Amino acid sequence: MNAELMHEMGPHTVQDWLDEDPPADGSKRELILGYIHVSPFACMEHNAIGDELCQLFKSALRLAGRHGLYPVTNANAKLSTARRTAVVPDVAILNTSPVGMVAAIPQELELVAEIWSPGNSKRERSEKFDAYAQAGIRYFWTVDLDGPVVQAFELRAGRYRLAAALRGGRTGTVTAAPVPVTFDPAELLPE
Image 1 (cartoon, rainbow, N blue to C red):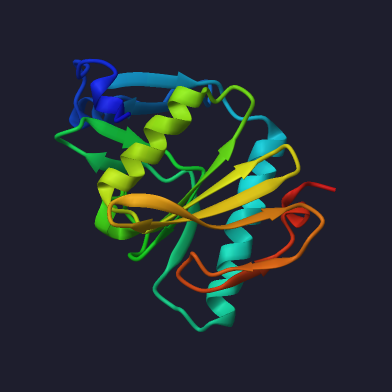
Image 2: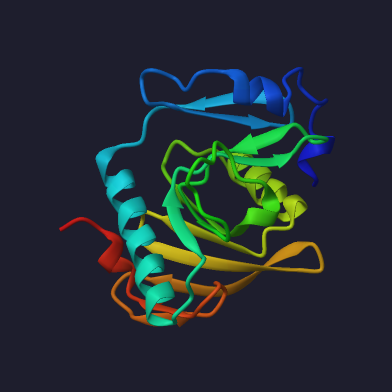
């Protein structure tokens, strides 16, 4: 079911979201279908995994000689003004320099990744899948801390299709990315 059919559009706009100061307590504020969603600040393990994933992307891009692509953590993303959706993926690969950027638009996002915490509801996960697909972002990765398990999705005909799933303890190559990435998901965990 499409997230839009689940409830009416909320009162907030993408501009409202941009105009708000970031929460002082470090929590994450996102706008999904016009409703503000606030998540508590991420635990240190979550942040460490995001940093490792960002570094993994950076190394793979450099190794492949792909300059002009920029892995970043916690990038504001204005996905849709009409759908009133703006989120903060844990990791993103931009195709434009992040210098001076406040928020990326879909055309600037090559890949987005979400690290699922126990507090992420099924509804939130579903809404983000739908929002990223509707925005036309080609690659979407998820990291589930249990395992850990990394799933890489590629957008085909407007829907994400699972392209690869890797479980911690096994090295594999994921091609659902701007460049192939070879790693063991266990390497993302802090030692």
